[in-house]
Amino acid sequence: MKILLCPDKFKGSLSSEKVCLALEKGLKQQNKNFEIIKHPMADGGDGSIAILKKQLHLKQIKVATLDPLNRNIIAEYYYKDHTAYIELASASGLSLLHDQEKSPMISSTKGTGLMIKDAIEKGFHTIYLFIGGSATNDAGMGIAHALGFVFIDENGNPLDPVGKNLIKISKIKNNSAIDFQKLNIVVLCDVNNPMHGPNGAAHRFAAQKGASDEEILKLDEGLRHFETIVKSQFNKNLAHIPGIGAAGAVGASLVSLLQAQLQNGFQMIANITGLKEAIKSVDLVITGEGKLDQSSFQGKLVGKVHELCKELGKNCGVVAGMIDTTQENNSKFIFQKSIDDLANDLEDAMKSAEKYLLEIAQTLEIPK
Image (cartoon, rainbow, N blue to C red; front, side):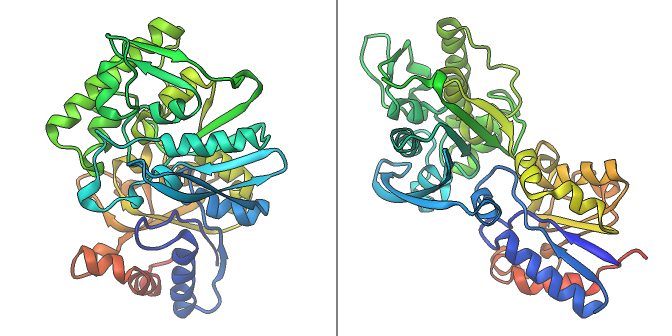
């Protein structure tokens, strides 16, 4: 029996590499004759560069920048040849804030913009931006601001590039000296959400970033307004672009102002790491993530792995930190197992994830 392990990270708990190691150990204890292939994965969200570093032998650059609340920090990005690889979460991530600091009304992606600016100034022609794990809902205003764009209100005054000011924008002025036509900026995301509406950036993700119900409505209204401004001023229609709502709709400014392309991160990483060929070579695929829910099948890794397995006629099982049992995922996998079923509570599940994954792997019913 040849088994491929290709999970995502378990966010806040284990890297994808550590998930693979725990599952491998448990499976080997169940049957020492299992042939295990570890293929840690990511889908464009935070943690993606950790996967690519090893595959592409990337080198690191450290840079002074700003966190989501404009405090000075040092962050890093990576490069090879003329290409830079930047994770939005390294400067604009939710993990950089304490719980009481989280607020997508006042957080900004400006720090990520400064990292992109540094890469441009250093001569990188292609920039891959991985946008998972954001603390923001500013439609990428902060990034655009750092690169020379100014957002003006109806009185002609410049606005701070934060979520609460989306609704106040009357005009966007390009003061940048950068020729974005000569750059190849690729935004890699892990979801297919639209910019606004019930499944958009604010309604889907802002609560976990600290927004109240009232603030979610204001942010959604601001995103609708931003879309209208961009359409009228730059003739860019963002309404139907899959993934434009990812990471607080950060792609809105990147696509409309910086001439960026928006792509699904899973496909890029799968191509670079040879995932499809790896799946072809095995009898069983086990994937996983921190929480299995409906969003898992809207562009994220678990859903994409399942699609590949279905295409290639391979059995696919899933192991997760927790599973939303209200969703009808049962028929998609030959098994689905959850740490939540073994742990005492969420804190125990997060702290002891490695132990519980080992236990799960020891008792998995592997088809013959």
